[in-house]
Image (cartoon, rainbow, N blue to C red; front, side, top):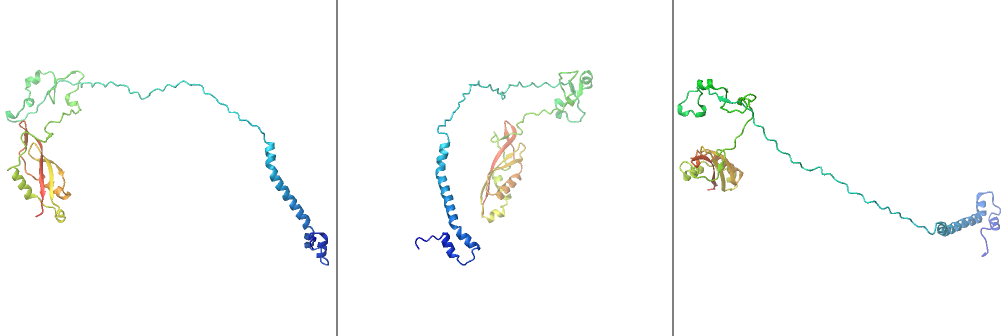
Length: 272
């Protein structure tokens, strides 16, 4: 039994003795040995090829290959000149051309007033002055600079503004500060009598000082009011209201003239 060849033809005939050999099993069993030999041969050939393939590739590839590196030297170029397009050119300011106007005499409409109330500028020209004058009658006395091509002063629509005068300036200190009628004690009594404690501030227990400053104008009236130290929005508004209701002051004076002056005033809210 040790030398028994299961794939031999004799063993196959012995197994299928007396059986239908036309059935596919007999053919498959008879050809099993040839198929196994072919499979082993193909497998061995593939393993051998895989082993010797790297050697074949190495033998076919060139052994000494040299890479050539070409270095190109750039020629030295001249630096390009860049034109500065942001150069600021000095522009001479154009001188304003003087307005060309004609000479004229002011026409004053007749008005009955006292002699002492008439200024020299508003005095009526006599018929003799108007008749002897060779210049036009217009809205003002003007010495013109072009009697032929100039315009009448009434036709010039340009508005000339003057510099602010001291009437609009507000001083912090002046020679004679504004005075409230009756003095400082009367001012504090007025504030205490007219101040209404806001109910919201009372409910929250808010009390303290609101520091204000306001303008006493040249006519003694209260002008702009500012809050320097705030306590509560409702208290601030009430303090401003009372200050705006103050009667007229004796205005402050600087060099004998009434002027606008800043006046500081503390307004106290105190729970009792």
